[in-house]
Image (tube, rainbow, N blue to C red):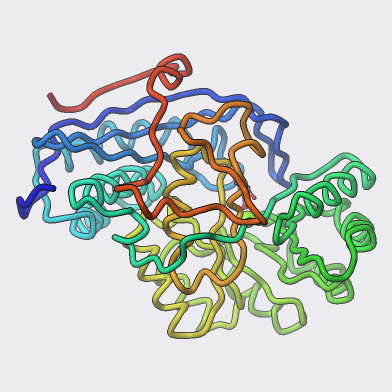
Length: 378
Ligand code: OSB
Ligand code: MG
């Protein structure tokens, strides 16, 4: 435990690693095979450390940020505002970065979340406790990528149901939607929660097609239209019984306020990386709680480091629905943390008895996987 009132970062280390997914992951706008991941390590003047993971993808399929833009943003614009510039804590760091840098939220989040980990470790408390978490286990859902044919998807969904996942999410796109979803519904039975995620693949011209989802008892339709299309989502929500869940659209607390004002959706997929980190995530969480809007924690094919951050966040009270928080073995032959994340009865345990993120980064393995590295500071 340390008592100093200011956090003084002496060093920010960037590493890029390449980690092969067990199977390629297809969404409507592209696919991932080898996951390139930027890891951030902060070290302070007292020798405490904190880890963060940047969720930006290899290509701008999901959002405009990429691994390469995030690397540049962290190295040239974020790190110089963090290293040797003491700050009272991560919330003040968020304000500092938010004031100086437009966009680049995934890059900012990786550094801000590393500072939350560092502060938790300095205080000797679990990250979940520092954030205000109330759960010691979080419910796990699985996100199944687009498949070439109905049978393959049905097989995967049945396997996921039998493994105990609490919710199965199917990626959809025009031409790969209703027959796929209805075959899965038929195969898994009426009681398994099913949801669908379009990753912005539709337009208002598809409204009649999307209305057919109302008969398939899906718990939500995630992000049918472009992230900027809040007004169009509101019109669609008025035409649908199925709740719309917004993902790409919710880049900040202000967008959630807009969603509520416009009636553009009824559920929020909260990804801390997408909104610039935990400070903004907690504001979104609290606002959703005030308005009775269910929240769940999304995923971005994270390694065990990013998963630790997501699990800590998902322990907050308004996370009422299962998150895209699958165990390590769903994604990787070997994860970069010990212990790896494991699922029991469709849940992951929150490491409440350890300080910070609660898992150890396997440094030797990370070194083996590293494709580039840079250090700002000492
Ligand atoms: O839209 O939720 C999404 C993965 C990459 C980009 C966007 C999304 C996803 C997922 C994966 O659905 C969820 C996971 O990490 O398990
Ligand atoms: Mg999504």
